[in-house]
Amino acid sequence: MSALDQIEHVVVLMLENRSFDCLLGKLYPASAAFDGLTGNESNPDAQGNPVKVWNSPGTDPAAMTIPTPDPGELWVDMNTQLFGVPSVPTPPTPTMAGFVKNYLEQATPGHAFEAKTVMHYFTPDQVPVLTGLARQFAVCDRWFASAPCQTWPNRFFVHTATANGYENNSPLRVPFPYPMTTIFNRFELAGRDWRIYFHDIAQTHTLAKLLPLAEKFQFYKAFRDDARTGRLPAYSFIEPRYFTLVTELPNDMHPPHNVTLGEQLIADVYNSLRSGPAWTKTLLVITYDEHGGCFDHAPPPAAVPPSATATSPFNFDRYGVRVPAVIVSPYIKQGTILRPPGVVPYDHTSVIATLRKRWPDLGEPLTNRDKAAPDLGNALTLATPDNLGPDHIDALPYTPTPAEVAFAQAMPLNGMQHALVNLAANLPNTTRADFRDTVMQHIDRLKVAGPMPIPASVDASHVSAAVDFIKKQTANFFRGV
Image (cartoon, rainbow, N blue to C red; front, side, top):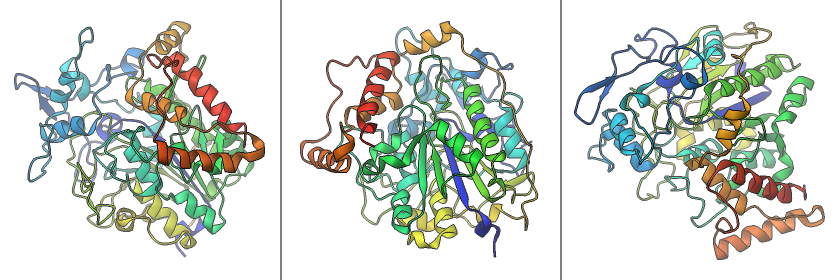
């Protein structure tokens, strides 16, 4: 019996838009055993001068919100970051030399884009929670985003093993909500419990087959309670806070959101699990959906397309840029640097492969991608759960000032936030009496009429107004649950 068979609870926390080098490149000295930063990596600027990787010391908000402004993250942006041009060359051999070029191309009047900004990395003392867990348990330096695409396609891969041909966050494309079968639906069919925990709005509500199952969506506070009281389901997926809510800034780590707030969320997830009765039977995966334009030096390899049917403009036959991945369990030997057993690297569909291996009644692979993906069983090398880890971990202290909150509320929406406002505009308005029928009728209407735009009466130009709209729409949706 493998150690994976002893796991009864898998928990995945997926944060936003950071590359491996950005957060973990200095975890250990670069070597054959750990593919980190040497400190000599660089990209050319507009004049061809090398711009080296660098660090801004300290933990003040200015240091912990780099890069500011936000880098580009569209598919064409990532092509430039990987290849130096917005189109894909033949053969598609990544040089990883276009990050600075693409960052400078984002510049608009009134916004300063400094060449070195996108080459920044954090040191272990600046992100002590993530690095502490990586050293205590396992870090994977061969985990790539599932595609060189924006947030939504990569989040689709962790849930459905495909992006269904969508290369960007595209909430107004038909069909919407998206029709893919999810691993959560497999849990439903197998009679196994699952839950999605979220803070403000769940991006997973973009998936049509999950909308009728709204009772399985809970606010994050419920995760904390469920973990500490032993009520966690077999599979838990956690979404961070994407917007500024009252006095709370986003904790998703999406640039330029403060990284320390994401560290505080990671610590809270770990502490909740560590203090609960099921700790020795739990596997926690902490990863990021995509790199968000932040520099990484490791070229992404070719990938197995999810389907034999080609999609345009991209066939999803290449991985995206490498992202941080920390694997936590008492069955993991301290100081593990996790590598895949074969040539296929880890990607987000490794979560699905792990779930299917642990619970065979979840059925066959969802797509060719998770069929090829390595699972995480080889991280669990201890025969017994002896690496309990620290009883409690603390993130760096940081509480935003009222001025910082006000500034964040007045900020224009980033691409992810604007897409989530579009999602909110397409949530059904339900009542408890006819919830399931209302949701299914709503989905059928959207299939025919197409997704609804953000109402003209809604001010989507800044965060505060968008949050008010999201609160209203989610309240109207969840009142029927």
